[in-house]
Image (cartoon, rainbow, N blue to C red):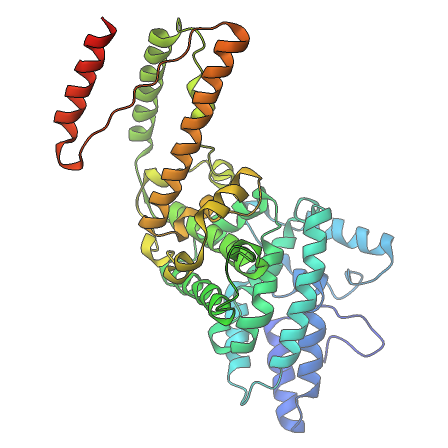
Length: 411
């Protein structure tokens, strides 16, 4: 028994139905039914949401076809589906069934469904990108997360065309997911183990590297890596995997973190007392770097991780660092556009050093400008700036000599 006909809308996939369809196609010596079903299901967000459910989240074949275009029927079905979602489990997908199904599909010679899967995933990506941009589908239906869990289980390393073409579009769409949705994905993926995370990290690394190599000679000041939505989207997905690796790894004990937090607050209070009377003193929080929004959503800090599931160097892309323009990237960061500085896990130590140098220079000029404006416009005393010239191999000696000379000069 098949689960759709030409006159009906697509419903959903299960492991049993896919295996039955593969068997039928082998007997008929034609893969047209499988191609049609794969194309139609992976082209439809509602179909994927209902596919491969756990037994306690299974969908009835009667009345739960949320692919209908009638608004009332679709909303009613979605609300019913929301009530069936177990929020404590994080998701309702039978991942073992999904993996076994893709293994069975991979056994088919020449992968005749591959073209249909590529086209369907491209179309799906465009549709869910529009939903994620202008609606909040995950908040309306927690099972919307199923789409991303199922697609990420596709054995992409065996589907070169899918990896190079449709998957970057999917990553671009996923990058528009809300912070709460990305955090939910990170928490779910953190339970999948280091082998799974390492494999997906390397796949995304490959996507980024291939897209950079394919456009060799194109990159420059006119067209930056930041402008490529496939590279940007893949980097955003890699960021979710990065935090999944962090929260799934070995973290400092809560007692240690609480003690460190108390000590830091005590030190900051003391500094406030000492500096509180300084005229024109700028509060320290204004100069603090902004915390990553995904880290805030997850309430986690990279510094608190003793050992991540995936080593940090697996996320660093050497080829990307050869082409990225740090100054232009910094400008993007200031304009709240996509910036690799906000995804620093992908940068080399040399690139991070350049980022810090530019950031410190900008901060210094801003503080100097603020001091001059306060002096001329408000009559406030200037905040002193001390310029020292030191040699690399005599840092301490030269610093002490310069400071003492300036101190004597002031007297």
